[in-house]
Amino acid sequence: MPKHAIAAIVHNVHFVHVIPRPIRSATQ
Image 1 (cartoon, helix red, strand yellow):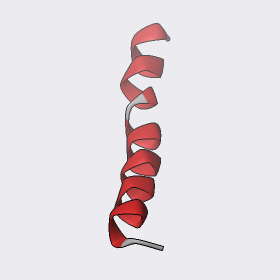
Image 2: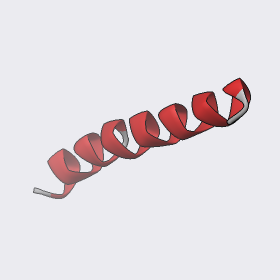
Image 3: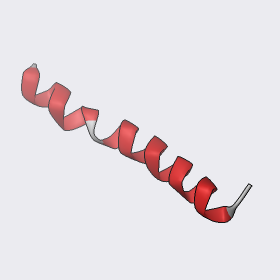
Image 4: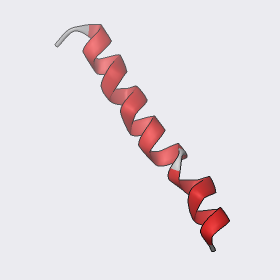
């Protein structure tokens, strides 16, 4: 697998985990 593909997957996983937290905090 190309390194850029791995980096994209890692970035997406990081993005998915980091972004929802402030949203959940704001809605609660």
